[in-house]
Structure formats: C-alpha cells, structure tokens
Image 1 (cartoon, rainbow, N blue to C red):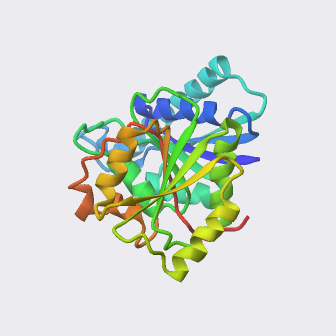
Image 2 (cartoon, rainbow, N blue to C red; image 1 turned 120 degrees about the vertical axis):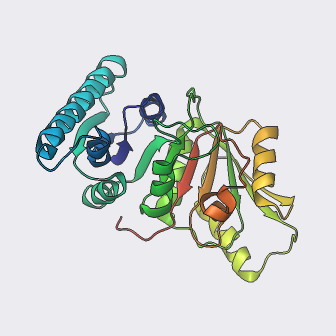
Image 3 (cartoon, helix red, strand yellow; image 1 turned 180 degrees about the horizontal axis):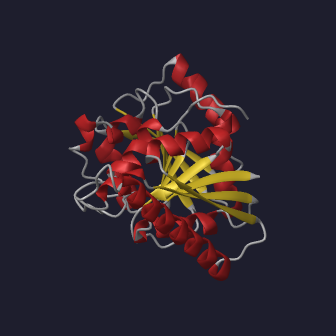
Length: 283
C-alpha cells in the first residue's frame, strides 16, 4: 500500500497536483492524505486579529479548512472514483513544514505531491516558497507538479547524476514503481567536463544499473561544466515527461534549491519534477 501526502492551499495549482497524483498512481493501492495546514492563514485573515478575537478567528479558519477539504474529497469521489484509492483529509492548526514532517513520520509517507507554486504563483520563480521549504527540509521524496500541467504518462524520464551519491534502494524502488506501468524510457545523464569516472563513481553507476529499473535505461554523458544549463537544454530538446533529481549535499539538485543558484536559475519547469531525498528511513 502506497502512502502519499498531498498538501493543499486550495489554489488551482494545488488541485492540479491532486489530479496528477490520482492519475499517475491509478494502478496502485494508495492512501492519499490531503492536508491543509492553516496556521499562517489565521494571521493573514485580517489585520484586526487581536488576542481577544484570536480564538474566534481560529475557529472560523478551521471550519473553512475542513469544509474545503470535504469538498475536495467529494469532488474526487465523483470525478475520479478508484477502488484502489483511500482518501483521508487532514486539517491542522500548524505550519506546512511541521505538519508535513509529522504526517511523514506518523503515516510512513512514501511520497509528497504538490504544485511547484501555490496561491502567489510568482511567474519569476521556479518554486514557490512553500514548495521550496518542503523540498529542502522535509525528509521525504517530493513530486512537484508545474502549474497548468496536463497529465500525460511519463514515457520519457530524465535522471541527471554525478554518480557521487550512494542511492537508497527504497527511493529507487519508488521511482521504478512509478514509471514501470508506463514502460518509461529513462535517460541517466552524467554531466561533466571529464568522461573518466572515479572508483566511487563507477561503483555507484554499477549499483544504479543493477537496481534502477527493468525499463529501458540509457546511460549518457554530456560534456558541460554548467549543470543547470545542460539540464535545461536537455529538457528543451527531448520529449521529457519527468525530471528526476536527488537532494543531498554535492548533488545536482543543490544547484537548483540553494539561494546562490536559485536566483540565477532560468529553467522554467514545464514537466513534473521528482526529488529524491536520499535519506535512510524504515521500510
């Protein structure tokens, strides 16, 4: 049984992420935890929030959160009924990061699915602040869905790597389970000015070849020092349906997520983005 957490702020982008997740995992038995953490909304509710009316405002926000979650579940059951899927709503007076961490631990969540942006939908950034926080700090794989993403099966997947990371079997298995039903072609791309691999890199590449997928996997090398530009060009020039990266120190994903490079990032993600966290967790 797959356990999937979908945070929502009830924006169009968040609802698009829900729709994508339901379709992607339509063949799997899944528990979907659809969660709204509304603590920030309490203090954004009105400039007139005081100690005297805080409880009243909190009650109003909590009630509205519960009602909107109930509406989402009703809409899902009416438009996308699936006997393999179970839906659980979670409304919490908490901040997104803390509530996500809590649910990930308590429910042994396999994957978080969310939009790349929320209500603010700033066109100048790749990731919204909430998505960026989850990608950087929550110890769980994240599948980020771009705005206006129309679902299409992940037939062609790009997996850039520097072969410096000893991948975790649990997360590689999750990735393989995601793409196996669609017979996806996976391009594992090594981006470097040097084509020679160290012993460590050779060992990690060998592990990937053994553990990755029964799907068609192509191992390629791109001669470039600029990781971001190389990935951007590959996505633009190939029919890529999903980008897969790993979030750990010295990984390519660090180039995308940390402030020194985020400000320079020109890549506008127009494909789903799967970030593995490469962490040790209970099976």
